Length: 120
Image (cartoon, rainbow, N blue to C red; front, side, top):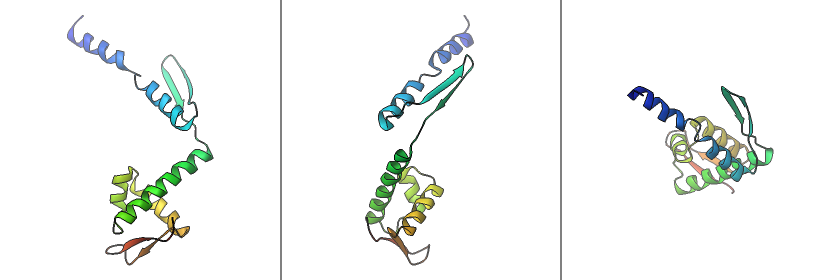
């Protein structure tokens, strides 16, 4: 066996090694088993969610954003995205939703203004 063949064999041994971590992690966090479909040359894994799962995640995100705003009222969307791991569009969505629900409000302009938590 030449060096290239040996490298290929070692790489092939590790293919798919993360599947069990994703599946077990999803099951332990959401208590939902992913649906696995496939054949010899492909796999399709569907990670199911429920309305309850979505609400729980949204509540956690909202609470995290509130805590960050309380810590720094002048925090930017970009900074919120970095800290929370969401995209800036995701942060924009959550901030708009929180404003519509009168949880937070913006005082002043986009540049130079700040956030105020109205209710938790």
